[in-house]
Image 1 (cartoon, rainbow, N blue to C red):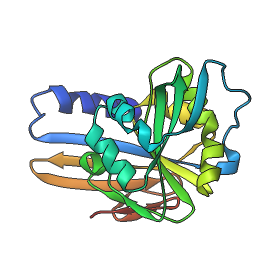
Image 2: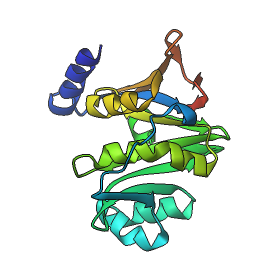
Image 3: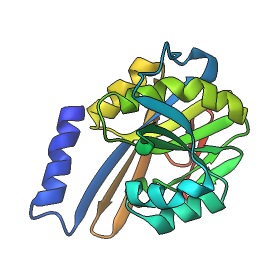
Image 4: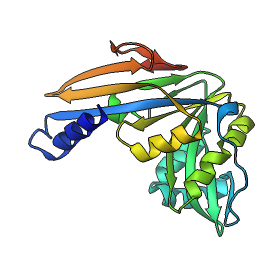
Length: 212
């Protein structure tokens, strides 16, 4: 199925259908905090911590949008970072529920209601070999500091590198959401890991998937 999805994505992005057709699928993953793979020892070249307000300028450069970083910090999201020689080389954002998440709206035209005790992880990025793995291995400690019992995250269906990274850390798939836009019409469906295909709104694990 993922091969077929990749073909459709290429056709929608580069073919003659591009102005009228868009198809996006995101897969939702969940991990219990105490089930995530624990770090043995941080490589000597790296250190890791939560970003502070003083890091906002560097975070803005790292993510390519100072305004977006400022918005996230203002609403209380936290960013876990890995540093090499005091420069950020990996980072991921966390937001603790209860909250409503809109980061995937442009892709799948839905929002997520995240319950209390669950952290939403998003917009992760690593730029040096081993930095992203170090950050993922630090997640259990960071989630515990936030009081989160579990973490959920969505990943584009054909982003195999990120999916494999999450699976190796202890995440499991809880289903996927698909959105097709054709000639101005929008069709949205979801598919729990144990269940059939249904139209939104719906539930994937602890996450309530909302149409609006």
